[in-house]
Length: 259
Ligand code: MG
Image (cartoon, rainbow, N blue to C red; front, top):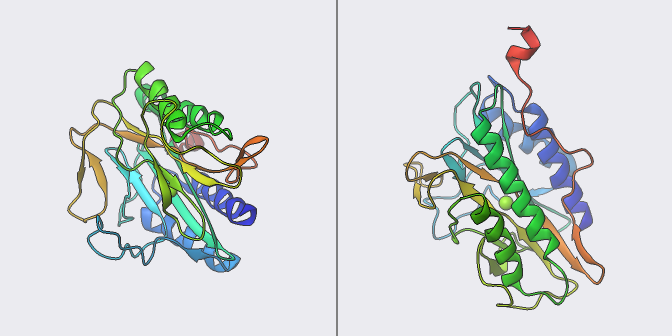
């Protein structure tokens, strides 16, 4: 599964680099689609049609902006100064899947957005640190939830992490909060996606009119960070680790022009 993880990491890095003020969400989807074709990979999203989706997804990337946090269906929208963008990308390489998500701000960032993204990243790191062989699924959930609660955030246990393998969503479900010491025991050889997502002031989400995009119920902005992680005898191995970590604060057009 390493090649799939490497490819997904490269795509997330390319998207983070490309995202900027004025860039259209459809251009980001097209970029991901081009990289899939060049690699000979397969999209996990384009034909995806689960019970909670209105129709096959039709795109290869999720782009969730501001009060959208998960499953954002790319549409004709050019990113604006200060937008909080989350990209979520999964693809299959030689029949094995990897899944990763990343949040950043394009242009001038609001302090509360940067804090939300930083908390989400800390929660991801805490979840990964708990993904030790012999630990329970609940230990990961608890570690993620504890970071959120300490930051004063509410946590939804819907749409959390999941097993990854030949398909994108395998058992078990890994909620973003829970009791330690509960659930399945993590065993070497397991591969799981760990994916905290939080909203600034609520844990309630509503489905957009497009039938896919999940938005906060109160207009709060959201952040989402995800890695695909292998459980090994020596501990967690992040398969979607990026060579260079992209900046959480996107490049700013106004900085380029000196305005
Ligand atoms: Mg994902």
